[in-house]
Length: 280
Image 1: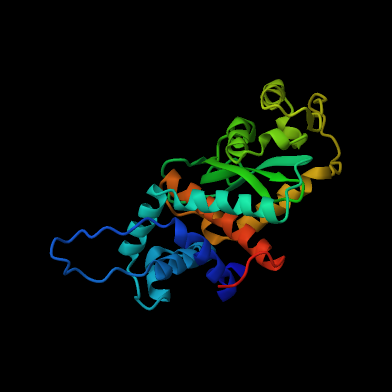
Image 2 (image 1 turned 45 degrees about the vertical axis):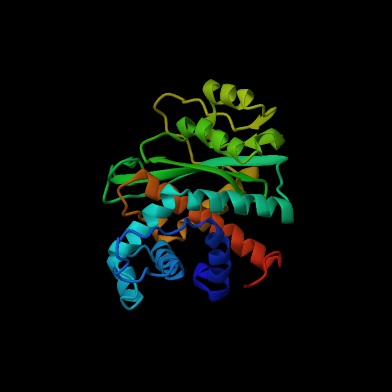
């Protein structure tokens, strides 16, 4: 996995470090154990994110350099400080300034994955025999670069997450630049078209839902992806991360933070490959 390569981790930590909150001294005598360095904690979080292992396994993989309790505490501190969301927003802005975004065309699609431990923000998966799962809805530019994303339970229809996804794009300051929005056949309804129009997008491309022909089964036909293939590829990239593919957290804020972290890593890798980021 590219995310675990030393040059990628160095670049990730360099981007994360300025966003980290200042540690607070809790013990009145200052005689508690030394604080585990943020770099070690981030490395453990990245290992768990990529492999999908437990916090205890991450502790063991690092030879006990940091405990699973410390990792959970540090993660929660960073989420409260908005570190992962700020990191993703920073990398989207950096990519836009360095490479540029293809916003003539934008694509939105959802992707459903497992959440066997349940918890908030999960639901019965329609593609996994009703087992618990979660999903994300993501918007990308014409090249598949993420520009907005939200998480939700697996039993939420993609169309119900579209408005929130477009709001996430607007939070990045990119919604007004989109000219054409590409969606799959499942988005073909009046509510979606109204939401897209209210978002200021002038053109929507969505295949029409085929009319039913009674109970007679129709022969399967090929349905080309057209301009929707970049978001399918991006969903595949995100699904390579074990903790997204089979999430074992029980809080929605944890899954949302992981999603933002993966988006940031994806953009950092692309910027490294293009030579726009220097290795520390």
